[in-house]
Image 1 (tube, one colour):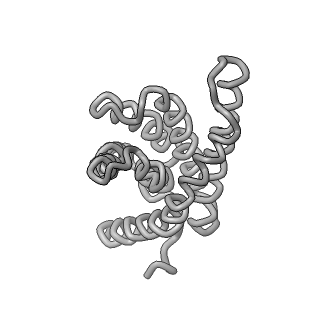
Image 2 (cartoon, helix red, strand yellow; image 1 turned 60 degrees about the vertical axis):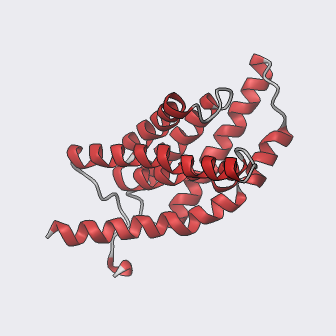
Length: 187
């Protein structure tokens, strides 16, 4: 069933893209809260969120299914709404996460209609987001006096490696499952 699916953007109507954006925002806000609550109960603080990267999953999925503009908007709006409702991500990380997730959603969306395996699309979006984050950290340190070191960027990437690997497994599965569901209900 999966092999017969075309790996191009599924959601084409404005109504469907709007619903996808709302669902993705809800998921991007709600799922990390589970990790924050679990981290608090295990007394590890925000470490679980830094390891599992739970907010990223919804952004990649919606970008791949609904395109670059929806991915960009969801990537910007999700951390802002999460911060407004829950105080997470921390205020010092909010602008960085908004930029990183916006790039993830935008690039995943631009990759949506490309004829290549979803894992390759995901890898391109992940690498693009990480490169932009490194550039943003460099700009913040150089021009705005922010205390950000290359070690912090490497540490962040190292901590999130498990989450990145999970994304390689879960994001394609979710995209394929949603594509199969959409194809079934289209007829």
